Image 1 (cartoon, rainbow, N blue to C red):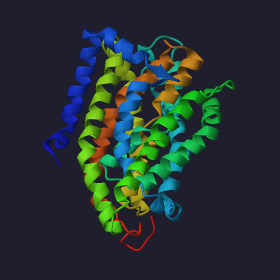
Image 2: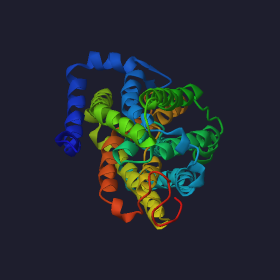
Image 3: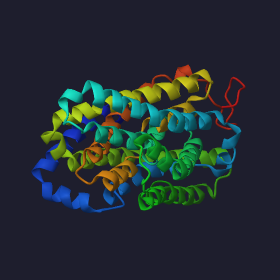
Image 4: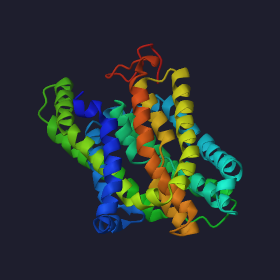
Length: 358
């Protein structure tokens, strides 16, 4: 591990400060970049995330991907956490903090929108950045792709009904352009590019081992670009919201508290379940990451559609963006230091060394 990677948290902290500073010093430039979006997805950030996701997609082996169904435990955990637990705990935390704990500090009658923003976040599992967190924890790229794809499929059918149930409204309009575009940008395009790259690199390999060595050497060479993409993404996200952070620090802090509790709580639930069920670490870590992070583009789009661009609900979803990167990096740190809690996995077979399937 390079010194750059070893002190990644320091670089991220500096990127956060740089983003806020750039937002203040060059608001026009940041405004132009922020305007380059479609369906609540910023296209500049999308390109940067694409660079982060691409190295992991090169590592996807379709022969191994076809066997993912033989290891159902990770799938069961991520589905249970994302769809049976997470939306409801987020709603409960919203009620607890904004109808009780923080009620004296917020505007009368505003609690409902704070709660709504949290529900919109909690009902949307991550599509893009989870690939980055999986790569940083040495997750199984085939299994991570399968988990994300399964969650995206469930989200198409379950997002609107769950949000409608928890918000008590019936006119939830799913922004399909946001959902479809994100899947195309963050899954389909980088996966296609990764497959093409992998085929080109392994075409002349004399053996599977030689092919994997070539792929490993290539991903190692481009890994620095992935880290730079992460830092640039942090600069932009905090640049876009720098004015909000500086003008409403107390509100941002209040929103962040339940989001932090939810994030660390969901990670603990999924990670503990994977440990108890003896799921290998390269499946357990991404499994817990998916249940922790959020599909903030979708949440922001729905919040704006339901409550308006300048609504409190939309602000809550934006704070979710700001909280996520530092939180997820801290959880990457935890996951990388607890690999010994889990059974190892034989790369060639996908079977845990204890003899149990994942």
